[in-house]
Length: 117
Image (cartoon, rainbow, N blue to C red; front, side, top):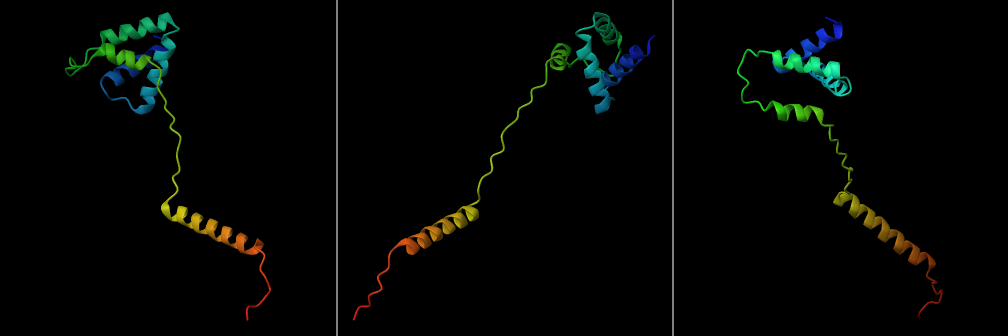
């Protein structure tokens, strides 16, 4: 048996018996995706899958649904991060804006130099 078939056999058994770590699961999923394009690999994986005899009862598992979930591409949603200005920063910005407006008004408003007696 070629080395890759032994590895697939091991990965499938580990996955089905829930003893595979995340790296092994990722490796198995890569093999499954490659099997779509390789009919020999796909038939071998299906044979291993079908001949596996679990030690515990797994009759409640919907295998067709699990297979379809493995085969569908992952959905990655990227949500934009929205920064919200806190009320303290908003208040500080408002105070600075009012101070600049008042300073500009006082600076450019002509003042008379006459004194009232």
